[in-house]
Structures are given as C-alpha cells and as structure tokens.
Image (cartoon, rainbow, N blue to C red; front, side, top):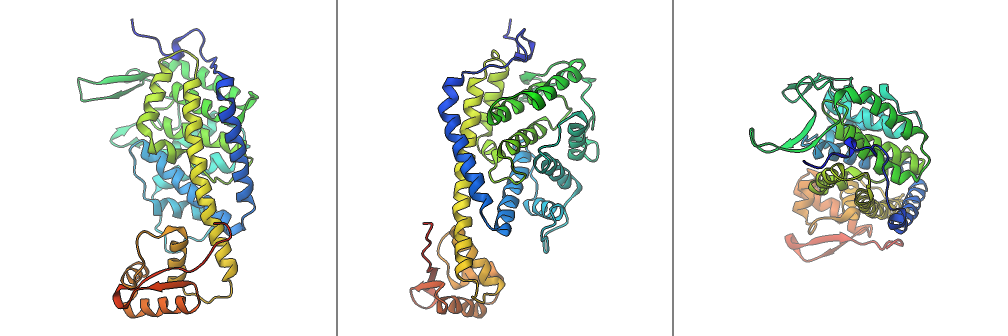
Length: 371
C-alpha cells in the first residue's frame, strides 16, 4: 500500500518542524529583510515607487510563468502603473487576463492588513479567469471545485501513462478545510516568515480551486510576507526565485505532501529561496542608490531623454561596450545624433571615451560613494 498523503493522516493539519534547526537561518533572514525594508523606505518617493513597480512586474510575470503561462511584461507594467496612478505613457493597453492577475497581486499586497476570507480568495480566482475558461477547458470560476470529472490530481506524462504526483482532499472536504486554514491564517501567532511558507504549502495541499491554485497560493504567501514587512510595497520577489528553481519547487512540494506532518525540509527550502530573493533585492537597492546619487549630483545637468536612458542603463550595468552605433540603435536615433549626444556627455564629464573613430567606446566616468 502506498504511503498516504499528509492530508490523509490523523495528524492533519498539525504541521510541525524543528525550530532549532531553522533558528539561525531564520534570525539572519529576518535581520536582512528588516534592513532591506528600512533601506528602501529611506529612498526618495519616486525611486521607491519605481523599485516596487519593477518587483511587482517580476512577481506577476514569474508566478504565471511557473504555471507555464507567459505574460507580456510591458502589459503587466502598464496594468500596475494604471492601477497605482503612475505614468503609463507609451505602454500597451493590458489584456483583461493580465489585469486580473495584477488585481489579485495588488489586492493581496497593498491590502495585506485586510482579513483574508473565502469571498476574497474566490474574487481573486474570478479575476484570474475572467472568461471562465483555462486554456481550452471550462472551469468552475469563483467557487470551490466540485470534482465532477473525478478527483483533483496533479499529473504528468503522456495519455495512458500518466504519473500522479499528488491527489488533493476530496471536494466535499474543501469548505471545512478552507475554513480551518483561514482561521489559522488570521489568528495563529508565530514567526510571520515561517507563516508565509506554511500558508503556501497548506493552501496548495487543499488545492481548493479547479485551476490557479499555485498562483493564488503564492499571492497568499506574498500577503503574509507583506504583513511580516509591515509594508504594502514589495521590494523582493519570491516568485522569481521559485521560477528559477521550479523543478525543485515541484519536487519538494510532492515530497512534503507524501511524507509526515514534519515540514522542516520544506521550510528550509522556502527560507533558502527567501535568502536568494533578498540577495537579489540588495543588488537592486545598490543600483537604485547609485541612480539616486548620480541624479542628485547631476540634477542641474541638462540631458535629453535619449541620454537619460543610456546613463541609467550604464548605471544598471550595460552589457558589452557602448559605441555610437549601439547608442543609435538603443536610442532610436541617427548616427550623427548619437555622436552629438555622446560628445555632450563626455564634455559634461559624465562619460569617458577610449579608442578612435568608429572603434571609440564610452564608459560611465563617475565614482559612486556607495561602491
């Protein structure tokens, strides 16, 4: 007889873990996370908004990519900017399905202190699937699954040779399981970071929806992390790190759901992804600080939009050498205009130049205090 799933055991849903084994890692992460949030809060308003916007775009696109759905990043940025009252000039009009994913993420993170209940989760689900279809399949939208077509299973492999990775609790259990989960989510007092990892695992184990369980589960995770940070702005992306290691993500979920109620290994994995997310965010913070330092120093420099775009790209880390031809291609201008722009930046001491004629390449001639 195969080993029962965790939700089939007598211990369900009494998750347990080795607190001592996680203590040092958790303390370090909580310190770094707090330092990151504080540092971001001290940035200028516009830079803070732009950084949060970049992370939200990453969160939305990567969470969908984990499930094999590719969203246009420009549409996602446009949708978020419109909803937050930011500049969206030149950005495409987002499709309804893009708007739906963005609405869910913004509701989860910007209204993190509002109680999470059944109606809110089902509202997110309806926003994810505005047509009532997932690909070519008609699904139950804005309601819990019914299992009319058989038990909810996560499978892989060709037809007739499918491998069942997981089977969720029967549909008749879902209302009770969700009620128990939501009560825990709103009342349990524990480390908020561990709670975020546990909440995601618990929700996807219940698997209460016909589709979109992973995306809703990650929105709940982000909501819990926003509560931990005490901030409606997101400065690090867990979904980006999960997507980068999604095979391991599915593997650890499967192993955890097929083992006992001890979830120490899952929490170790979750904390490792959070560590990577914070490290990535610290790199972004350094770039943002450099931008702020540069533009504070050169606030009186008169640069056009093309020059501003190129300078920002150089601060962020330009791929390869900047030459006049590449400048013209990126800035969408003639070669003569590119040469004039570059010569102007050199004369202002912003760029340095090496080489001669068409072989001349340009570099940022700025030393940063934060380096």
